Image (tube, rainbow, N blue to C red; front, side, top):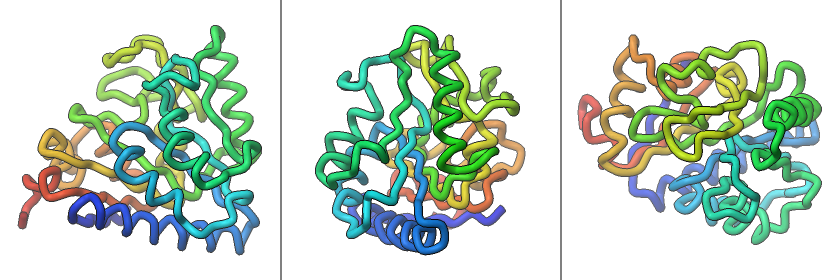
Length: 238
C-alpha cells in the first residue's frame, strides 16, 4: 500500500499533521457527518497534540478513540487518555460525549475490551474503519500495545484485545488489534529521535520485517511517516 515519508523538525511535522488532520476531518464530516480518530500517548501527545488542539474544527463532530491504554486510572500520569485530555481535549473544548476512552483500569478487562469494541463499531462501522489512526512507535517497533512476537499481534477476530503480559510495564493493557489499525482510511506514524532509526528503516525498507510498525505500513490503506532527521538517519538517501 502507498507509503509517504516526511522528514523535518518536530515543529514543522506538527504543522503538517495539523493540516492533514483538518483536511481529513472536513472531508469526513461533509461526507458522513462525523470524523473518527484513534490517538496514542507518549511523545506524539507532547509534541503534536497542542498544535492539533488549535485546529479550527467543529469538535462536536469528531469522535476520539484510543489505540491502546495501560491498566491505570484515567488521572494517572501514564494514562494515554490523561495526556490527550490535558493538552488537547480540554483546551479545544471537545464535548464529553465525543471522547471514548479505554477503561483499562476496570477489573474485568475482557468485558472492558468487548464494551470498547461496541463503542467503536457504533461510530466506525462493523468491522470498524476509522478515518485516521495516529501512532507512535517504540524503539522495539511496537505500535499501540502490539509487540513483536506477542500472541495479541495475531488476533484477527476482535477489534479490541486484552494484553495481560506486556513486555513493557504495566503488564495489563487494552489495545486495538492489527486489522483495525490497517483498515483505517489513513495511518500516520510519528517517530522522533535516534532511538527509533533502526525500526523506521525496517518499517520502510525491509519488506520481510515482522515488526508491528512494519506490518502496519505494509498492510494499511495509506501510511504516512512523520520523522525528524534523527529517526530518519538510516534511510537510504539520507
